[in-house]
Image 1 (cartoon, one colour):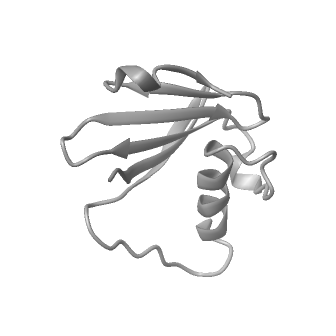
Image 2 (cartoon, one colour):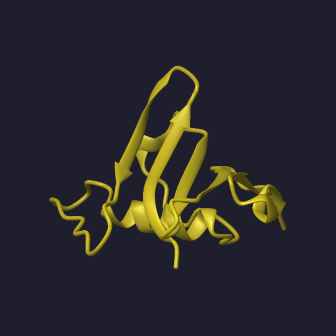
Length: 102
């Protein structure tokens, strides 16, 4: 079974914002309004949600959300989606997943 290894936001002229996950249980914690719920919305969105249901000021100049999945054999599948919507693109060393997902 694949697991999430990283979530990343990217944008032109903006440093990447990312969080990496290790195998096993991971805990995301922090004060109120620090991005925890936004992180969940990013996962939902890149997995195919109709729209980004939460918008935060700190994400204003980011364009893409990336979700990296890794399986037990260290094969990586990266899903990418523009924050304004559109198709989900798949990249990785799993040939059947390369391309655009409907």
